[in-house]
Length: 169
Image 1 (cartoon, rainbow, N blue to C red):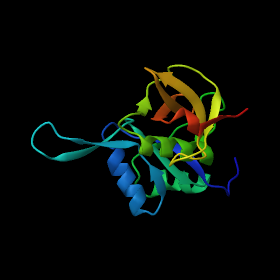
Image 2 (image 1 turned 45 degrees about the horizontal axis):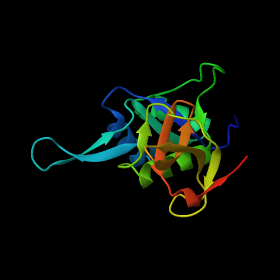
Image 3 (image 1 turned 90 degrees about the horizontal axis):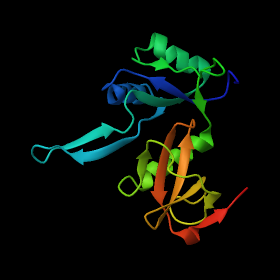
Image 4 (image 1 turned 120 degrees about the horizontal axis):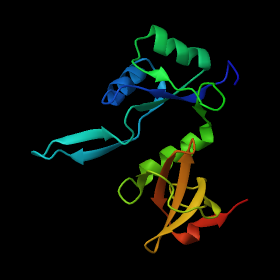
């Protein structure tokens, strides 16, 4: 990991504090991402934003900036270590971009998945708002989805016409 390059780091916060941490990072000018959905509250017509992942926030910074945010700027989160390498866990830019685009494109018909339902061929989307996204094809109840993974434990899917997919190696 280069000390000068910015990465998407994984930060863990306490349950229910995700949006507050996101807002604090935004206030500090730090690029961040918390997958959320908008829903109507059960009482009345109030609209509520809720995180799709509890206790996790992604932030883009250099290693030193990320550590300073946690220790010096009052961001109530801890950077997550990769259990295998004992290094700070980070996500490649392309993986994060694909993950974000898939979640934002089809939260109703797709959205966050607990685990991949099937492993298919590796594909690239060639048209539409997801053009350039790489993932795996999934057929579920006669519908075609592209599935992208993050850290081999978070998966998102979006419905895509079969004609918009090309097989890649």
